[in-house]
Every structure is written in structure tokens, then in C-alpha cells.
Length: 476
Ligand SMILES: Cc1cc2nc3c(=O)[nH]c(=O)nc-3n(C[C@H](O)[C@H](O)[C@H](O)COP(=O)(O)OP(=O)(O)OC[C@H]3O[C@@H](n4cnc5c(N)ncnc54)[C@H](O)[C@@H]3O)c2cc1C
Image (cartoon, rainbow, N blue to C red):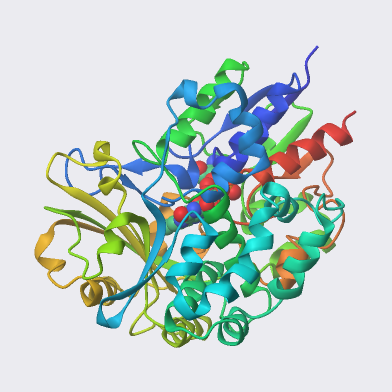
């Protein structure tokens, strides 16, 4: 008789965990509170009919680069179910005042050359890390207990990745362009750029840009969830949407439960069943800043001053290293930045299926304090207008989400935190607790598989993959 697993939550981690167990011969059912599967990977018509917007995530270097997705996609399993990656001409652009811009090209050499005086510094920093291919990124997405396949590359990464991004950018580069480019990459960490390991976040995302690009799925991020659900169905597994679980006691008989939820929800689901020490650890778990997001429908492309910005699916807005560092420091101190660091994606420029002919969809967010209800629309639009005068005149539809709207959309986005908890040094190592088996809970057969476990936030599915392998090891 096959063993039976129950997964709570059909986010990318829950679905990857489900597929990994189904491939090992388990019968798997996934219960999902929302009407559609996918968690952070859902897309909806938020502005105009026919305009497809990614409600949460939009850009997917991690999904293409992660060992879990590579394993699932092998032999065309995901593409058979409609998942197709689109690459913009360049992965990323970062405009500066005066019509200048830094550009992350697929090639290290092209990126370096365009950075002029910083060409050799860029080559020295990124070249050896990129040369290791998946060797570095696979190592970073693996548990700390697994010996790296490329120890020298990992050591080289560790020596600079441990630094605050501000220190590395300031000491390593001389030009505004190179410093700003690195600040934008590191800004994905949701930490102050003066904090240790923020350089590591910047390096990881830059390396992925060179190794796999920063692609987007044709038709919207929902295609990722739909393809994963189809692969699971091929293996005999099922997803029940519109089925919220409020207590572990509601679950059918099983051999393992995997929770694609964050510590606060684990406390609610398990009630008094958790040993008090573990419950205390979960209670102390820290959530990070939230996001405020705007989606627009436009009657034409964004009128960027610098043409390179129209060649990139992702554009980082915020100006220089100093400006981005100041904006992120504001957020860490519980304030709302006047000139926020804005992450913007313009998918319809490269995927016409996202918007009716002649129109475009644009996605952008900035960081705000956890639980914020401040409307950042004007400040975000001012940053776009700064590098693309006339942008506001093209807006024909607008949809905004504050941190409460995000939490209502997906209960894992606690206070608007998109990463399942702060990813600073402490919670990078102890996620959600220190130990060799962070995916296990003290409850027999109950495991955590969300981004509140290693390796943390992002659509790489590795939290689910590690949790599923933990299940397989413990039930051998
Ligand atoms: C605005 C925004 C932008 C982002 N941009 C990017 C990006 O560009 N690239 C990237 O890699 N990542 C990005 N992310 C982060 C990414 O979305 C998350 O890291 C990822 O979705 C985490 O996956 P998960 O499976 O752990 O959780 P989730 O995707 O949050 O899925 C959890 C699922 O569990 C369900 N659930 C919760 N509680 C229950 C319950 N009690 N019963 C049943 N179901 C339940 C939820 O409804 C949800 O479907 C972004 C996120 C946001 C919000």
C-alpha cells in the first residue's frame, strides 16, 4: 500500500514537495485555501479585461536555476504543460539621472565593458563565480550540512558575500553605474545595505543573471503553478482548492504532513500540540518589511529616457548606491522612504500575450515597514516618471495592494513580508530554528516546507524539495 502525504498550501514549495513525494510513489493531496493554486505564482486581470498581471512574483532566475525545478523540468515535463520561458534582450537595467543607465547583460564581458572604468573590477568579482555555472548557486541553495561541489568557488563567494553590500559596492567599484547596479541587486534582500551578507544576495542574483538570465513565463506566473499542478496530476496527485485548513486535526489519515505555511500559522494550526520550547522558538520568529505594489495598464510602452531600459524585463529604480541605501535604511527603521527603491517589471514588452494589442502591463513594488497601510502610489510613480517623463500620461488602468491586501491574498505574506521571514544572518542559519533538520517539527510526521525554511524566499522550490527528502529519509 502506498504511503499517503498531505500538503497544506499549494505555493511553489508545497507543489514541489508534493511532486517530489509523488515521484517516490506516495499518494499526495494538497489542500489550498485560495480558489486557484500557486500562492505567490498567481496571475489575474487586475486592471483591464485581457490584461494579465502577476499578483506577486514576476521574474524567475531562481525557478530556472534551482536544482528542484531543473529536476522536475527534465525531459520537458513542465514545457509539455505549457511552461515557456521568455528572455528579454538584457536581463536588467538600472537608470540614473542624466539619461545614464547600468545594464546587466547575459555575458560578464559585455556587462563589464559597458561599466568602463569598473570593467576589470566587475570581471574579477563576477567572472570566477559565473564560471562555476550551477556549481555556486546549487551550493547556496543546499543545506549548510551538504559539502559544496565547488569548495573553492564557495570560499571565494563567502569571502565577499559575507560583507554588507554597501561596503563591497563602495570599495569594489568607482563608478556610479557599477555601484548602483550592485545596490539594486542587493536590495532584493529586504535588509539594510549596511548589513552583513547583503553582498551575498547581490552576488547570487547577478550570477544567476549571467548563468540563466532573468526570464519570465509566457502568459504570466500562473503558468508555473498550472504546469506544476499538471505534473502532479500526471503522477496521480491532486490539489483541492478553496479548502482552507484551520487545524491539523482536520487532516485525513496520513503518513506525513507538509506545511507550506509560516511559523505564525504553524502555531495556529497545531494549537497546544506543540512542545512549549518549539512553540516559543516559532513565536520569536521575525518577519521582515512588507511591500506596496502598483500594477498599471498603459496605452504604450514606458517612455524611458535611456533606451536600454526598454530592452530589459526588469528595471531597478532608485538612483545611486547612496540613495538606495538610504531608502532601505528608512524601511529598516520603520519609516516610509520619500524616494523608495522600486523594482519594476514590464512583461508585455516581451510577451504580447499579457495585454490586449496596443496596451502594456507593468508591475512595480517598493519595500515598506511590516504591516504598513501607507499608500505609496505617488512615490512609486514619481520614481518611474523621474527616469521616464510622460509615464503617467500613458496610464489607462491602475491597481494597488498594500501589506493587508497581500496578506488577504495569501496568508503566508504576514504583514506583507514576501520572503516568509527576515533573511538576515541569524534567520539564514536558524530558519525557523537552529539544527540539522529545520524542516522537521517535534510533531511526529509533521514537516515544514515553506520559505520560512532554508534556503528562504523566492521561487526555487528548494524548501519543498528539501522537506520532501527529509520525509523520505525519516520514513525509510
Ligand atoms: C509582490 C511580490 C513579488 C515577488 N517577486 C518575486 C520574484 O520576482 N521572484 C521570486 O523568485 N520571488 C518573488 N516573490 C517571493 C515568492 O512569491 C515567494 O518566495 C514564494 O511564493 C514562496 O513560496 P511558498 O510556497 O513558500 O509560499 P506561497 O507562495 O506564499 O504559498 C503558500 C500557499 O499556502 C496557502 N495557505 C496558507 N495557509 C493555508 C491554510 N491554512 N490552508 C490551506 N492553504 C493555505 C496560501 O494560500 C498559498 O497559496 C515575490 C512575492 C511577492 C508578494
